[in-house]
Amino acid sequence: MIGRKLKKNNVALDIVNFSEEDEGKTEKLEALLAAVNNNDTNRIVHVPAGTNALSDVLISTPIFTSNGEGGSGFAAAAGGVSGFEFGVDPNLDPELALALRVSMEEERVRQEAAAEEASKQEKGGE
Image (cartoon, rainbow, N blue to C red; front, side, top):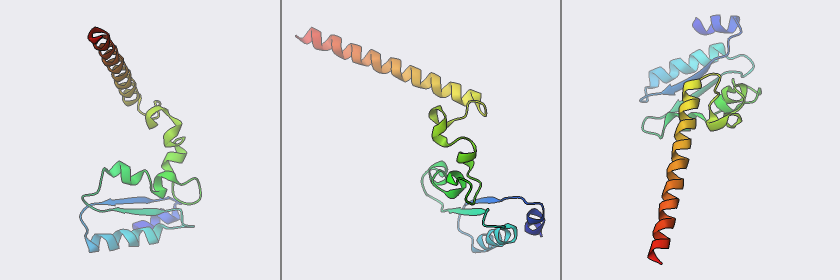
């Protein structure tokens, strides 16, 4: 019933199922997707329990990578994951973008200090 209402209102639906395998739940999600699906613009991704980070699995799915040929193409709609520094749109999450920039700068300074220290030790050894 929900699927038919979503289809009637031209709503695209992408489903990410990340839980223990439950055949009844999977069947219900598949039925929902079938009821909503219009021109193959909806996707479902099943992520088995115990896999790597959820983001690593999702980033390679059509939900994130599609470019208008079905699926929402979240990453494409957001300008692409690689379209922003660190894959983060600073307009959507400015705090995260700033934290990543600060962290990278601190790491750069740390590496420069370590290289300088190694250089001093090398010169002292000669």
